[in-house]
Length: 506
Image (cartoon, rainbow, N blue to C red; front, side):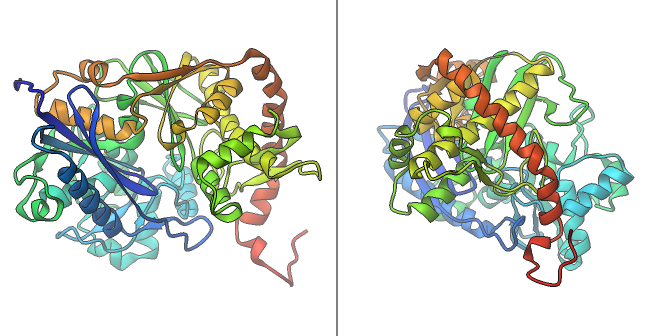
């Protein structure tokens, strides 16, 4: 184990949906420097979502250069780097790491036909957002790209390649391609049946293993010291769980940025015969399972509302407006399904809805209903998971939305759970730094590192009377989707909504 000194620092890079965060931490988990660079999502069609990976790298170069300049020699020297990234993301690259097309990000659900084919022919019920259906879509619809692809990589894989020149992925990202942790190998039989050559997938490392070191070219572009170790990172939601220290039974990690991920730990596998939520073994801890639920457009819905309804408003302004409306928003319900929805309904055709509008409602009601709708989605997932046998005492809330104590109170009141806000809400970046600390031997293991580097800012307790009041609104939320489900499929499954005349639909 290396000798720890006060001058040792760690760099966590988080490649999110809307931007890149680079944060330098000391060994106590306190941030020394931070930078954020924004980029956009391209929506070519209603269920498609793409990003140019060069925008990720440009943002990494700028944000890392910023934090390197901010980190003086007195504060410390960056000993290791690790990367957190949005997932599942499919990016075909050539042998030089050049992107052959835009990345299909987690929000992209174009592979509906391929997903249905997989379920019917090989019994694999992957959502269209997952990587095997996306790879099958590329093979069928972009055959030249598929043929030229040297590797299919994900967000953190791409950035690790740009830093080190090595093609690898990590255990967490590999799971989106059904990687077999027990045998430490790709699912060759499954890939063969889909005619996806296993050679197109990178070598797999355990998260925290050293990928390589910063190359001379990457050092010139980022300001990092040549030879700095880079540790394998992973999926942002898993790294947020580490960075929020939700590593004990009863603690749940909720990370809300553009989307929301819920990570519920248990000592045994949670099986859902209806496949509303999923459970996977967490490969970095023994006898540790994670049941997860993911919502597609929670924070993205709020950003859409702000950008299109109140473009000059800050998120703090929206909170202030929402506080003027009563709990329950006078019967106004919002379904946050702006790009379809994942768990627990898994409906690619679902759409965002404000339901119950009357002349009584104001913009304040709309804002509060939007926040409440996102909280109802969290409760919907948590109740599903708890009914399957998991145990939830508290919600450790992180991500950009955790800046809002008002939203945190709504989440506590809607779910009936205590919401814990960590001091560092950018938990994915802190989780990456924790992996970096293990990778170079500055910390002995995951649990000890999280205990020493994660600290609590505040606890928000639920108000019992409001929890009971929200029961009716929550029932309305669930009923609204059930009554609209057939409508969504009828009008959004095949572009029917785009027909302006000559339609025979009845």
